[in-house]
Length: 223
Length: 217
Image 1 (tube, rainbow over the protein chains, first blue to last red):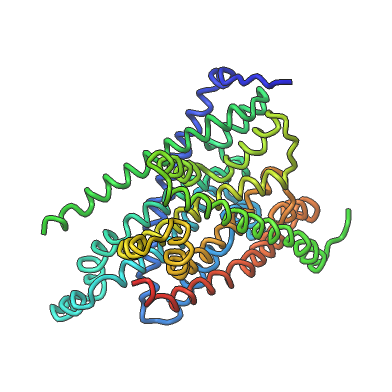
Image 2 (spheres, rainbow over the protein chains, first blue to last red):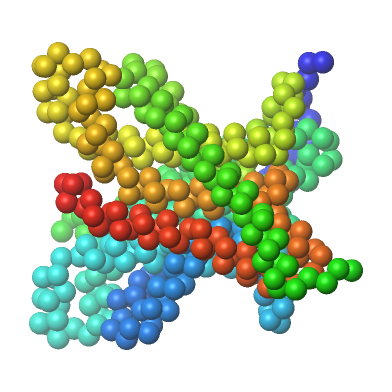
């Protein structure tokens, strides 16, 4: 009983996959931009001189890094309504991605900040720059440049992780795949193709982030 | 409608958590063995073997774990292998783990100075001897902290196995939620249990990193 593969059965549903790719991309872009922003603020707070703030951020980071993304997603989507916070599937998905990436990038950015030579910070202090000014003009760019590769990998991981958002019926790429296989029972073919799409997307995303990194830090390289 | 007290929830989740631990351990050990073989192939093999291993790593690092599990779960029956969710989850996670560990360990082997290889070659050692007596003992010391750190990713990865129907901690959480309509409590407990498994591993990895830092240079 040889199974006959029929990849052609996917072709009529290409629009579903395209919609999925678009939504996955949107989720990733919003998640990455806000998540990294959150991470930078987190790293700033982690270096705060008020121990309470630093500790709260520390607890947030450890909680997120030591629980599965799927559970964070379920907690936000199914659990939060109990507290009166009702979110749509997409809001829950993007919030989970932001919260998740925020925690990881807090740690990554923090490592970058620690790598900034102390002399530069002391020099800035002797120029009477405020803490915020020092962070904005002296610390953050070299810190980001240093950890850009690690941050890029983490963003790719979050993009790939978004595939489990199909479980709360957020209509991203994996959801499209599930839908198609429910229509034509060609599970293997669909998932095979979608895996390929994810692979291409992750390679493209890595390239985009590399170009973006070159652009962002170009000024520094010429100094 | 059955009444579920908090203790019932915790008890049932703990029972399911055993499967999470078992799946993590199996995937980690088997993935480590496959990863070691791949590492050998990549270190000793010719150009196209190296390329093949690199593709393998790229494939597993560049696609979602969920898709990998789906392909194993839906793909193997097509070639006539009847496969349970447990087998699919174990196989998928093993392959996933092996790809990441190979990549981590490759970095560690490459961190060993070229002079070590040359010196052992000049002593007339074969590749297996070099690996066994010279390279691995040194590489292993730097490899331990990131390997322990990665075990956290494996534990968290097992949550995805719930989607192909394997009943572990996450799936049990979903099932109990469907019975109790108390998602906040149940997923809260589930999160705490994952945390209790993962956090000690994270702390241990951090401790080892501090301990071995001087070796890494």
